[in-house]
Image (cartoon, rainbow, N blue to C red; front, side, top):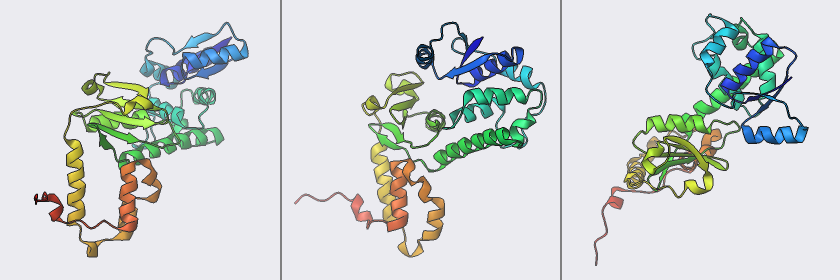
Length: 281
């Protein structure tokens, strides 16, 4: 029997349950129905059992059935099993079918997921930590800029974490719409401010047309000017500034590039006179 599961937490756990009940099944995965349809047409498959493509599964119950009732995490900073699966799936080199087989091999012993023992175990644990670090790095160094009243940022990460960052940014700014562009798509948070769903995905080509009435653009420019005017050049600690704004994070957003430029080249001349409007002759 051939089983096709969706590449999300529920789909992976449902595939694990199916594999435990029937070890001889053949597994294939897809991100959505369109991708699955393409794979089936290419392979000439007709009779396929679908898992995770419709409805909402009880992921907590599926985890309990697979690993039992026991403490799972080895360290407090590690995510729970559902978070572990979600992070591994977001890695650029993730193989969902391999992940399902690895999870089944850890049945009733979830500590194996976090111990990093064995080649496959270490590989997936490293995947989880790598994605987690990339997400934390985005939260620390990505600098969104207001565009037409929408808090916007373009992220460049090898992993699929744009939606995670968008949700975090939306929680931090509940009074503003948020746009996170990742490749050719844009994740929108607090979309109710611009007539969209609270959290949704749209083509990046139309993200720039969103507008929200706000004075944040002027305030942001004024703050940048004020900061430049008050800096004391003799007290600049270039080494410390480089540690706070690493070069590796400079490509995460336009504002972080500007911050890094200030670290490398210094800050342009600016005084409080810039705040005083010029008198007409």
